Length: 302
Image 1 (cartoon, rainbow, N blue to C red):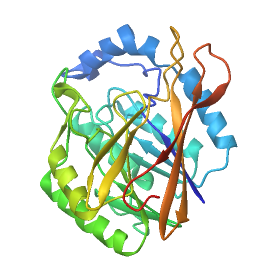
Image 2: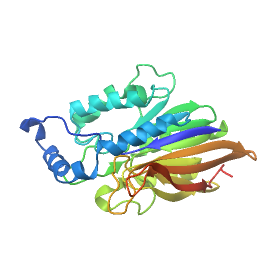
Image 3: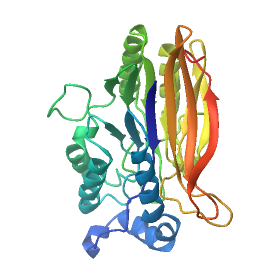
Image 4: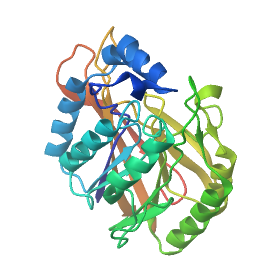
């Protein structure tokens, strides 16, 4: 049995002190949005409670599917590196970036250097970050993609270009031939109609075509701040596509707070079985509890 935990969209806060010249271009919109909306909607308390609980439970690996930060400031990126270290060693934690991490091109360069130990393949040492990358842990192959791009104001789109999709297809075929349970990590949701136009994944058809050809057992994403279960076509059946909630959402107005997902993966009947559990804070702000449980069914999953 292999236990994979998914945590997404922590939007670590509060924002550090900012000089006005740092708010040039898109950052001014994000700064205002944080103080008007996100500071109230997202908070560190729920995230701390979730992380404390998941670290107390048995696990083999943690996947973080983007939006660690808010407006791409260097102090945010450095603080997120410390937060990742608190989750576990780079061998135990894998991260992929989200659109808020890539607020400006300079932020991309900074996080690719600072978060590099969590975003490289096995035995790559000090090599630069290249997507996709692969990490093999027991029977599980974790393949990390980047959909994170710098965008204009009021846009939160991502992009998968054809070269990255081609590399993904070749890698998934190789891992499938090795008999591994393939988990693909991406920030933006790739299923048709899973995000509005200004938050969509540009090039999602490249991604879906690669998986239609090569197959995968599970796709994990973030971005939408609520838990979703979708499917996309694989070569021998539908592939589960799971979106995780923002882990920082506090409970309010009868709605449960943010959550994390646990996937129990085991060999069975010549393939694999995978059970998903969602753990989060109750709507009344009480203790963390199991919110949903589901047996995932897809190619190579029984």
